[in-house]
Every structure is written in structure tokens, then in C-alpha cells.
Image 1: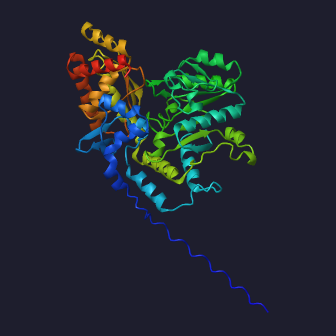
Image 2: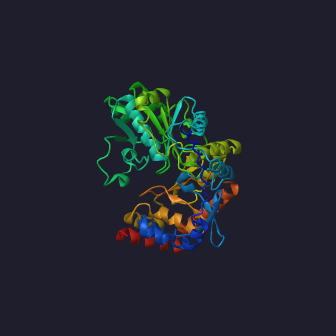
Length: 479
């Protein structure tokens, strides 16, 4: 009689990994952090460090909090750029930091791909509450991916191939979103792109003319263009929506930069009553500045058409989409926005800043217009009236349009420790998109510094115009 087999002893669970690999991030940064510019020049985009050295932006920032960062000497800098809009809450908001610590400590079984975790559903629910006419969300990893999703969904849902977009639009740099990018400098050398059609911002006649051809899937538009800070004309979005519905095409609102309170409403399209886009793209500030995330919100029927059967369950997906860290960051961001009233704050602080800057237009002849909504503001410079300044302006324009705006941005950083940006290539416009947490003292600081730079520019001499001549040499020499 054989002896029964002894049951196998269950394997002892592996000891949790304690990270004993010798990797020490703090030590690595302490040892090699000083090589930052050399490492970029050697291994990444070689033009970035070159550009930063040329304009004197090659700073070394050590830490950051809110709307400020500090260099190794302890000097503080005011951030009026917010990482191109990513830092809507400012840097290192404690609520977002805690949420990320919590989700990491939870040790969730994330990205199994064959389950339905709660965090994506909860974040979708919260986002959709701000657009009650929309019912579903797709989560990706960036703004351009959110736009790509909208383009794909619009084409599939309508069965039509063509997308309309605007001059000077910026919707991302991957191939699909690049096809609806209204700036040739980004498109040059990457053809062939998708066969989409450009119209002028606000041109309803052109929109209707294209729609009558019957092959248009959608019109994608930024309610306020990031390039130049140009808002759609009053009534344009509502009229465009009516035309699109009449011709059975969709309205896509790109709110990647303008959304999440930036313009004083949760979405910029909400400034115009009755506008209800069929698809809405968000990203940037939803990340809390930590974990890349993009979202495409849409109508029920569009999603049901794309995901029409179980065979099509993965017809559009993203490997890192809906990951727990991004979802936790997004939920924390929306909670902070509500608790701190940041949308209303953006409206109040934006009105204050825009009003104080607009009051300077009559004082400085090089300053032509201040425009925008909320904390998305464009400062445009233009041809002065006086002969003395006009000759200098003409010299800059002959070399390269946009040099005067760069002449303003540089002393704002170098002398006043305020980070801003020129709003686009060949534009005499500075764009201000500070974190939504800026306060009145930050606004005072910017206006005082801006006045000082304007005073120097109108004085006609000094280091600022010397720097202008340097920029002219760079432009003429193609450097």
C-alpha cells in the first residue's frame, strides 16, 4: 500500500523589497547636479542649453513652493509662467503631495489592465460634474494625447475625415495634433500630415463654407489661443456650434491650457452662454505638477459608437492611462480648487493684474494692448510714435520680429527675478500664466518690475538696448 503524498508546503512569501540597491537620489543629485547644463547639451536637445546661455536664462534653481522658486544663494524668483500652465496650484502643494504619498503607500494593484479600479471612476465623476452635458472620459497622459483622442473619436463617430482648426492654433506636437497646429514653424519638415483645413479665428463664413462640403468631422478650437493670447470673438463659439450642429459635425474645445480655472471659469468656453462642446480636452494643471495626465471628456453617444462592442474594448487605450498616481493627483487638484476657491481667485487676481497693466498703455508708447481673461494675460508691444524710439524699433523688426518682447522678458528675469515668456515665435507679445495661487503682493511685484523695464526701454539707452543689439546680431547671423 503506497504512502500518501505529503502536501506541498506553501512557498514562503518573498520578503518585500526594501530598495537596498545602493541607489541614493539625494547623493546622486549632490554629486552630479552641477552638471545639469552639460548633461543636456551632451544627451538631450542641444539647442535648449544653448538658448538659455544666450539669453541669460541659465539659472540654477534649488527649490520651489507655490508661485516662487529659489536659487542656491537663496534669491527668490516669481513664477509668472507656471511651467506653461502645468503648475496651476503652484509648486508642491501639500494636499497633492500627501495624496501621492498616500497612493504610493497604499501599494495598490495598479495597471493590471483587467480590472476596474475606483480612482479613474471617481476622477471622471468629479470632472464631468463641471460639464454636466458630457457623460464619459478617456484618460491619457498629456494634452496632445487628449487632442489625439478627440480627433480619433470625432472621425469615427461622424464617419468623416476632415477636421477644421484655426490660424495660430496650438493643439500639441504629435502627428495628429500637429495636423491641426496653425503655426508653420512647428509643422515644417514633418509632412505629410493629416488632410485638415485651417480657417481664421472668428471667421464664421469660412467655417460654413467648409462645412457645406459635407466631409467635416469636427472643428477644434482653443477658447483663448495660447499663442498671442487671442480670445474667440464674442458670440463666435455659440454661432460656430449652431453651424456645426446643422451640418452634423462636432465642436471640440481644447482646454488644455485654459481649463481648470485659468480664465476665471472652470472652462474658458463657459464664458459664452449656451456653448456645450461635444468633446473637451484637458491636461496640464490636472496633474498638480507631478504626474502627467490628460483627459478627453465627451458625449455618451460618441463613446458608445467608438466602443461599440466587446471586440472594440481596447480600440483606443493608453498604457499608462488612468494610473493610480495620476488619478490621485487629479482628485487632489480638484479638491484644492474647490476648497481654496481658486477659480474665483483667478478671476479676481486676473482682473486686478490686467487692470493695472492696461492703465499703463497710455503711459508707454511701446505698450499697445493688454488683453486676456482671468490669469491668462497677453501684453502686446508695437511701433512707437516718437522718431527716436521708432528707429530702434525698426532695427529690431528688420532683424526678427519678436526681439523687443524678448528684450523685456530678459531683464524681468535677470534684474527682477521674474520668469515670463514671449507668447510665440515672431510675436511681440508676453504671456502671463502664473499659478492660480498668486496674491496681491505678487501682482505688485510684477507691475513695479514691469514699469522699471518699460522706463528703461523708453529712456532709449542702457543695458536693455545693448542686449537688443546682441539679439539683432544673433538673428542676422542665424545663431
